[in-house]
Length: 530
Image (cartoon, rainbow, N blue to C red; front, side):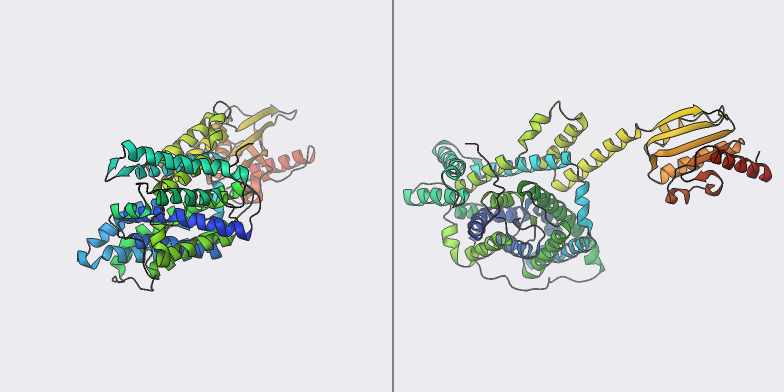
């Protein structure tokens, strides 16, 4: 039987509930870890995961996608918080207050992007960039899990290491083989429950959620409900100048990661979400975090894939995950803190296997080398820098490659008819990248007195192309030669300097055409041009 990581079947209420519980368990260590990265309390990270999850599940554009506190944003937040703390008395913890204010502004930017329908621009991301994105993210998830094999900053060794590896392998094995027996219960959830039972009742010494939190400097995940507060900072121009760059960066990173994750989930489930609606939901969720004391976030590809893998397809799965996380915080912290880290690492390793685009290796020698370069570039930048830089760089490189390849496609078929008129039939797009090659096709000095340039098989794409055409016509007219431009669009004609004299749209064939040429020559003679 072939192993299939993602089942594309439609979900059910039972699947959504069980997958939501699985995701909630996986959210705890992730939210705690990212809160440590940002330099805030684990409770703020858990609040952030809850509020991001509940808001985006209710109004987001991609049912089944999970949002929460993420590392990509946490890396930016740590600088914001440290600079904010330096702006006043350290005991006031102003950095955290500036973070909440920044989330309000970032959320507003994201909502504006959604209302302006900017989410559609995710379609401009090439498939090569998408493959690099998932490969890089898979490697980031894998590398982040390796930190779980450390204790007090040192790598595990001896029996501790073998116990950890054994429990991880057991969890992964259950996720591989259990679906072949029954799919009624998500394999990830069952794997976590079984491994947790073995550790608890077997008295096995290994890292748990509680030990992980304590090692990071926390005390536990038990807390009350988040409360409404307005950030306690001065609302003036100085504050705006300080938080605006951070807000823009957080908004852009959050939108890019969320929209890329949305596109990936669309492909995995053969369905389609709404990018613009997701932008609004992400913005609203971050604004709620700003008012209720969460660290904010965006879509989480790892937890989203766990959800899809476990059968979650509807909004209910995300709602259950968020509510279950809140339940853990309020009432179930004692039990969740007993879950072994190894079980959660095993689940995340299976996410890595399911996320990585293994088909990449099959593309070697079968696709153009620039596409392979873009895949490798985006993968490397995602691992060593962050997702936003990787995607933007990948799109820029892919666009430059596309422009270069199309710049080389401009061609001109030349002929002289029985009337002594030279024809240039242009083929290919004319834009900023092809104007130099376009100009090289013409022999202005040695051409006859009548020249026709036909753009029927070409298209003028931008202002650079318009200027190239204008310059070409001026050069012909300066030495007294008649030039006609045929089959131009109306918007192009409107931008040609001498359009009234030299442009014709869908002209008729000979003899009427040459009557037009004669009339044109009479105009030039009358004006004294020739």
